[in-house]
Each structure stands twice: as C-alpha cells, then as structure tokens.
Length: 68
Image (spheres, rainbow, N blue to C red):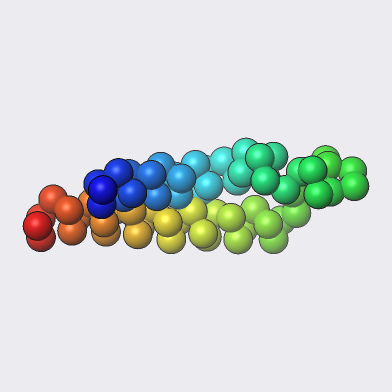
C-alpha cells in the first residue's frame, strides 16, 4: 500500500511541477470567468506543491525499499 501511495504522490508531484497548466485545466478552469490561463502565482504555488509532493513520494519510496 505504501508503494502505491508513494508512486501516486511522486507522479502527481512530477506532473504538477512540470505542467501546472494541466492541473489548472483539470481543477480550476471552470471557476474562471474567461478561462484563458492561470495566474503567475497559481503556477508558482502549483510548482512548489508539486516539488513538495515529489520529495514526499520519493521519501516514501526510500522508506519502503530501504527501511522495511
């Protein structure tokens, strides 16, 4: 279970840090009046969260493979 969760968090984090516009399109575009593009702050915060998720997922993989 830890392996699957770690893989999911890592993949989500990579997608969020590489393509934050894709995450915006999936989750936030319907909330915008013009729905043209995400703000610079949204892109920054999504990338920051993606990096944090990637690091947490890698940490989970390290725990799964080396400490169990």
